[in-house]
Length: 311
Image: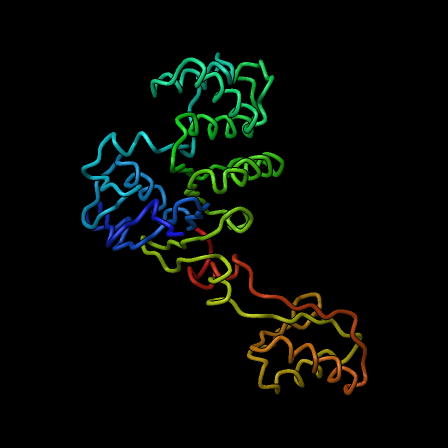
């Protein structure tokens, strides 16, 4: 089966005076995927969303959405988009049912089609049966309602701008569960700076830094490409001597000590490290209380590529 692109940008650039918010971005988002657009604050994520929706025009380059050039498509493509801004607005005196019906009416949806869609979306958002006015909702409830509103026109592409940034852990979990349930039903373009959210729900990711895409692909491939494997061990004595021994092995590229005393080894061959380390500990005349091994997580890949703190 051929996978088509929901979003494709070519050398997409947006400049404000001398500053380039986006700099020659080439990006492909497969239709039907949940795509994480990841970057520190100020990296250019919101600018990208404005270009995708046609709310801004590129300085150069192009962006095609669902096969249409956004610069010339106008409402022909916008009718297939759903969008949740980072701070969505609501009419606080409405109920969720009222609000979704109002949003559906703006798209010309009515009758039995709207009835069925509103019922489905309220259930998806966990708001079925809630009669409280929106002004009494928690932030998490409002965000789930915002996603439901963005889905009222059954869009082929759903754009989310920092949807979990102001939520508590429970609100974040509920919203991420809602987003994950959309996999295969619509394409989701999920812009965020929260790495754990991307790792939990997204299939693929692009990492943006200072207007440039520094990595792009399935999460597993990015970990394999940029990540390294690490072994963490704790010994009952002679930790410095054990660390020095490990540092001589060809598979050990870096050996460091954590503040709690654990030895952290960056390795090129984790299987060899697992085999040899226990024998090296015994040879040093000490014991071992912990030996863990695993690949670099998305957060470590992000820090390695972006460099420095999230801004």
